[in-house]
Length: 263
Image (tube, rainbow, N blue to C red):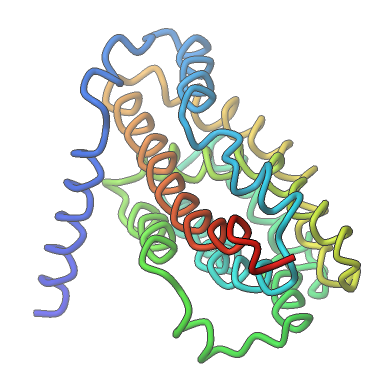
């Protein structure tokens, strides 16, 4: 019964995300793999979430330590378990795609060094801010949870592999620019260096992984029409869900600055 209910919720969630895809947005996608990859990137650059003001303005220039603390709680739905998502989605893959996912996973595992496992590095942020597990459960927003749950749903089912490729690939592609803003805020506030290692590392690592993902996972898969459609759907799901999440974060914080209640 629980499994049946979960599948109903997952199906409804997928249908809701599809309903949010702008009519005609995915029409006319290129069939040639290299052109398809370029089209995906262009799709992202034209989306309103690209260079979102929550990062480029608020986080960079205005956020205080409490703002960053709450931001990190919301980000934990993906950042704190990205290794598990990769482990799930690589099942059943082969060739260049499997090797790319494996290389990405091994980086998440700190290349075999326990103290450098990325989830461990992320937990140090919570130590800096003294974030408790019960507080995470209490303060996560619905939009943040949806972003994380979409990633889990797509990664755990083989039939959703194409969407997972688009969703996780776009997640990594957007990270470097966003994390530059987070590092800037961390340095501006003079917070402990031990807490920003995760973000500094991912500015470089995710640039490399995003390039490898597009070349070794997306491009070979783009010879299939079904894969092209699925990857594009997953990409737009990520863009749209991220936009709703960042809009919510900005709407919650911006009014406090506009009325002068925080300086």
